[in-house]
Image (cartoon, rainbow, N blue to C red; front, side, top):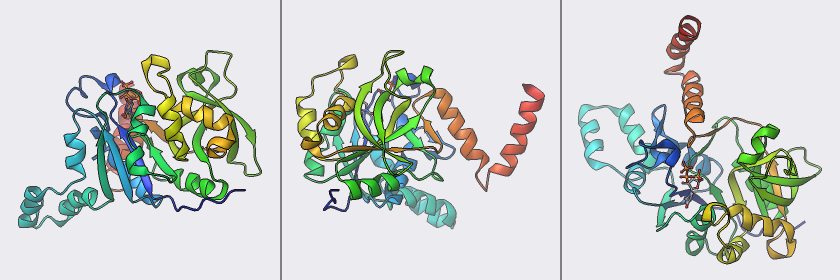
Length: 300
Ligand code: UTP
């Protein structure tokens, strides 16, 4: 067992995709800024990173990066106005996102795929393991995943990916992992990865979801990875090389996630995320649940 000599502190959040599934909302706004109840989706993701002890956050942005940067920065004008009104509650909400973490930004000129976005983080990350959180993948704050992945990486070394069991009919939409069991029921050893397998060719029902803790060896592999599916540099292709040759960057393990997760880049899942999180909010929940109950019984 290799013990990782580093305490993981850096998180990379790719948020430079085109968000075409959400047009026209994403014409001038990154999809990561779409609100889930009253917070942009990306704030949940940064809060998750911070909750797992990662306080240095690098966001990979594309065109329309301004709203992302502004959201995690101070807004003196607004703060001043709220202060004058004595509105402490809203002032705290405004300040919360700028006080969360040390934020850094790097620009991905062309959206050449998730692998390319991760490669843009190489100069900032340097030679230590780091986390990647996809900006449009929302893990319910009550179901911690990243902290468990960090724990497994620190114990086993190498890289750790997040896996979720999906229906066989759905696996073709995801990267899929071939796995072996380990002594921990929620941890598997990853032996191979296939991006969006054809029906009948999937090695398992384990889909890769948007959380990774990666060995920096992934950067050298990404530099040599040719564009794959859709002309994009796929992170899964680089992870496959890591999984198939432990000598390169240590083993690849998977943490099997059984909690609630929403792909906020998908319209249906985005709506489900809002309804679920709104129902469970102390301030909005009771009234919203009552309305929803009567809406479902009377209108549907
Ligand atoms: P997606 O494939 O879900 O993002 O990428 P997309 O391309 O924006 O979505 P659609 O299909 O057009 O609606 C997964 C994650 O990787 C980021 C995205 O921002 C998202 O968080 N990404 C993707 C990049 O940062 N750069 C890229 O070149 C591609």
